[in-house]
Image (cartoon, rainbow, N blue to C red):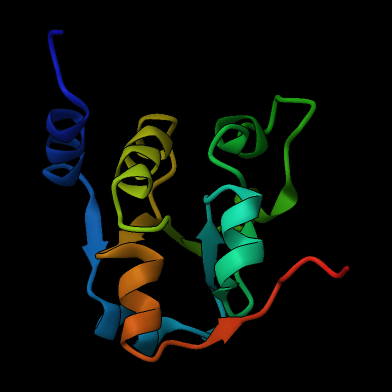
Length: 131
């Protein structure tokens, strides 16, 4: 193995913006800021998501961002600051770096991910699957 996942995350973190939970909480709900949950839908159903966050599963993110893709979602062309998060900030670090590589400039991720957000009392929306 040439690079471990931890090495990839470390390299990504050296090149991206990481928001502390306090800074992210201060931005939450402001015009021009979108939180983007890249976790698997089962994680959202089990734990909820940052209130008002857009769900963009990690496996589709690049396709949803690319305006030339048939899967493109307008939210990613809005010009809003995008705050990506996953459970603990590993996947979101890699995703943020990838989106930067694709040309998005106004993208960052949440230090500690959803776990840190919820432990700090950040606003959480219940998205549990109804029976």
